[in-house]
Image (cartoon, rainbow, N blue to C red; front, side):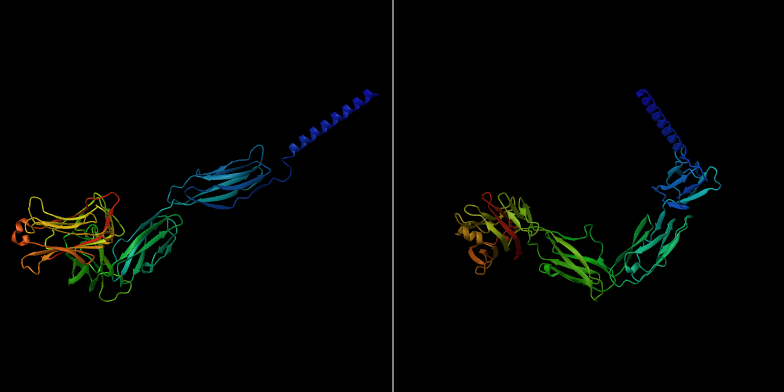
Length: 488
């Protein structure tokens, strides 16, 4: 009995397996359902792609019968181009080569399915290579204005964008472009310019390119004629006057900004010349100034023209520390300041920002004789130990010495030192040498002779040498100005 049941169960199991196999085989066959043949394509009728780096076109094909896609142009490539044996449904990717021509081009995709009449057509247009050529107007427009022209060659739609109002009166602001290279002429009406020279920018743009050029219109003419390469008027240390030529088309005037008025003076010599006069440079570094040229009659929108000038210092500097912002000079151990001019009868004035030395450190003013000449000379030592000393010597002055005592605090408080070599009011033909600190006379020496007059060949004057000698490391003084006024 048990054998009978086992045999029965085996038959049932075999029957189930056979049924499952047949069911699977029938499902595979039905994957291509019977019924009317059809194909569905979700592509648009037409596409447009770029000339350079064009994006792919993607669409789907669904069919129950084999199909294929053909392209009439090699630069347009559909993938896949036919249905696969395993599936009649596909995503189609159409890729393109770059268009290097200056004309647009068109390709047509033809989609056909077996057993179905008719063809699905897809048109793809690829833009031409971008080509924008602008022939600018680079001539200077006269002040009275007028019409100027420039040209555009473009195979794409373009538009013109002006940067400012005076170049905004344009007869054609946009165009469609063309593929045959035809040049289009654009006109700009520029109005009269009542102010200074002005410039505006014209920009021509397509969707992918742009080109800009500048239109410059002459206006009021007011400028230095034949300026230097640097554009500045440079005065040497001994130059105190220059006459420059001015080019102008209206009456002009020159003024000096208030911050420079103390040392710069101007005078209009004629309608085309300006004389600039400077005081000697009291700074120990090059100083900068300006002169403003403007019209005598007010002109709206014209602010004038600034002339920049420089004036070299009257001293040579060695190992000093210069404050670039203020122009002050810090003298430390090893620093030297030597005049480019010769001190004769005159007045030397030194303004200090700070004096920070004590004891044996000494600020020495040494008016030394020129090499090979036994001429007059003198020096002054500013110090607190052992004392201040004013000494003369050489031909004319003879030897003499005057001393006075200052404390360290008094030395550090000094802000102005003055040395005078001048005619002695009590002794005609003789000289008087004086030392003043902060406006107070400290000592004087009467010279026995005026060597500058009695022996001029040996007494052309002295160089001014300023230094800390002797000096202690870390001690210093800061000088703002050194002014020399000749009394000859």
